[in-house]
Image 1: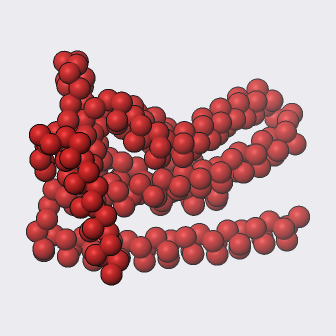
Image 2 (image 1 turned 30 degrees about the vertical axis):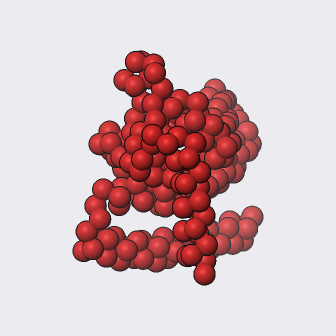
Length: 239
């Protein structure tokens, strides 16, 4: 019944659009008249957008794996690598906002490539959540940079200040868990990639890999949680 209802709703929407624009058929594209917009706009199924989407999946997977590790004291070289990659991921998501504003979308079987329609679709969708996460990222980077500068300036005479800054830095790093709000994009990004490869064997392989990835992610977070409890208990015992 739900399948019939959803299909009838889609057909009704499609009939409405085709009635308003009788010259349009399934698979058509709607563009603005601007020559410049036609040069910079991206189709959602193009190769360039596919590559950008793939890097987005890698960025989400990086955050999913390494954000929990920032709760602990790890090797300085690994910590430096995590900081560099965090900046790279942050730059990617900053650039993803304008990239989304120039990427078309499917509407009832018709590819919508008009600038105003694309902007309206993004603003009523995920723009607010993306802006909130980016704002928190900026605040974390600014406060961590300020804390590191104050620590280097205080020297050996600021032991208490250094300990307070260390605790503040750890608390701010925990706030990076808010980056995982972008997990809602993972399903959409994966669907965009899978649309290019619709063979049964490939889809079956991807479904198996998705299930294995979910199990590994769950085990990873459970292990980090138990390790965090042990470290917290040990620190309280020493205090």
